[in-house]
Picture 1: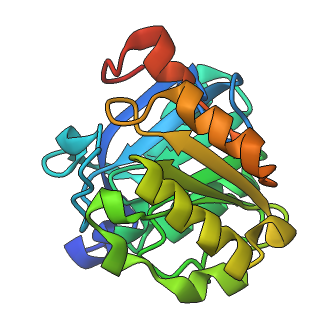
Picture 2: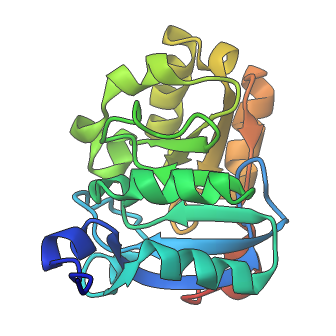
Length: 225
């Protein structure tokens, strides 16, 4: 008896909508500076004021998970970052993350924190971007995610000014985030001078890591870099 080809519903279960897959240097968080393959998923339910990847909101193309892994492998590096958009907006992202871990990669996930992270493979380093008042998406924070964080994860605040800084400082202390995982404070490039933020962190002796996005310094936000 001839084999029956899988129907559309079966095939769809192994696909994700992808904006781009590219090799660059990781520009931020714990693995900054490492050659990294970025898998950028299409779509995001948020509209942050400082978003630098609005081109990933729409479009993209459907790719099978096997094909995604094959393209990642062709780049020949150990680090892989799954990003967006908001990658967790596509439910099959969870399967992709586990498959990447199974293949032996060091995997990180950049997520807005607006979607439940409980289902993410524990081998993945989750980089949770807490939305500040200046982002315009404060109400989208899913605070339940904070209790799920481990030392393997990271929390990031992108700050647009002094108001955001004071708000983030209060959240840091109220939730004792530095006791859960590494905490990163970054200036929004067009809104807050890096030196100002650095001075505030030092003056307050905050238990956080100051960071600048290397890819913006090196390539000025060019897509695919």
